[in-house]
Amino acid sequence: MNYRIEKKPGFSTAGFKNCVNNDHAFNSIPKIWQEARQNGIGDKLLGLMGENSEKVPKGILGILSGGDWGKNDAFFYYLAVPYEKETPADMEKLNFPKSQWVIFEAQNPADLISAWKRLYTDWVPTSDYVLADLPAVECYYPPGHHPQNELWIPITSKGR
Image 1 (cartoon, helix red, strand yellow):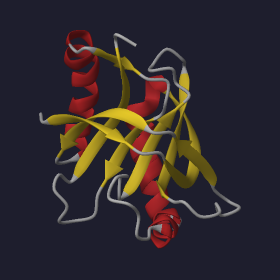
Image 2 (cartoon, rainbow, N blue to C red):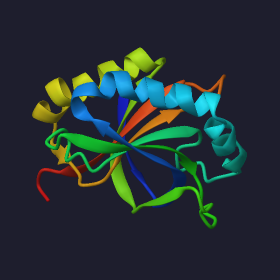
Image 3 (cartoon, rainbow, N blue to C red):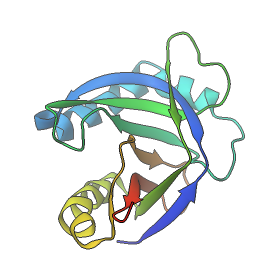
């Protein structure tokens, strides 16, 4: 699985917040996406997507926050898009500071699951980095984009 390490400028997102139990995450998150398609949330997010800098993820985002990298029983999962304007009243804003990321490429959602496993079992134990205290981002790009999906994990050097 291909990955790269990049420093990115800060960016903001707007989206919808969901609480997910760790033990049920692999079942709950697909249901969140399904409900978003059925109740118009997906269309609303797509409507917010405009021209953003090439330096931030462009697509629908699944943002994982507040789970302390699996140490808590639950975490927040946001369906969001990059968005710099005033956040709509029914959505929440997340701000990301300038950060360093390890970015795993994934061609489909199953590859994202593999990327998560690889992150914890292979990459973190053998890298010169630790997980940073920022949300992780699953990027779901529009058709024709290569790669089709990416997993953005915030990191810092072990030496810091």
